[in-house]
Amino acid sequence: MRERINNQIRAKELRIIDNEGQNLGVLSIKDALELAQSKGSDLIEVSPNTNPPIGKIMDFGKYQYELSKKLKKTRANSKPTETKSIQIKIGTGDHDLALKAKTASKWLKEGHRIKVELFLAGRTKYMDEKFLRERLDRVLHLITEDYKISDSYKRGPKGLFITIEKTKN
Image (cartoon, rainbow, N blue to C red; front, side, top):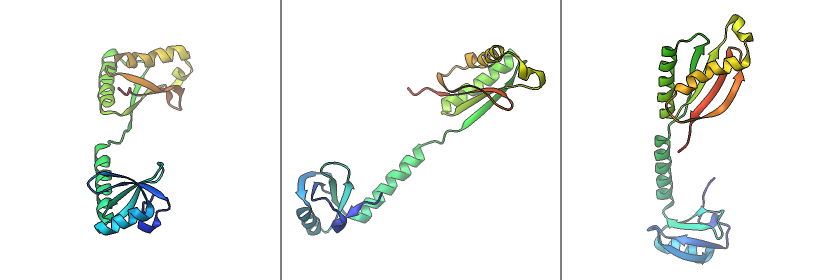
């Protein structure tokens, strides 16, 4: 979306805000343009979808600079989420499960999604589905962070898996 400035603005009336942030009220486009020119600034249509649209009187270059600063700040604060994977087997011992659950809890705290896979090899692929789910649930019960199931039990080429993510508080 590109902002319209000065004579590009199509609205008949605008709610005008000056460069100090003061609301000057609803003015016709002609009056707003004259006011902007008298201050030596541009008239920028900031929010075209409101009724009436909102226009700001300020230097266009300064407006673009502030917008880019704001965008950089939001990008710096956002962390990309990753889908991490934990793999267990049917015979994985309790201690190993506890270690994997601890790692999963740490990743959940960081905000990542976790795919918990039950690796099935050979004849174990044909075991009872209920039994396999209980094996997967052993790890899920050991995870200390609050989580929700984002992708329920599914069969993949390697076995059974479930995807979990942190609950939004």
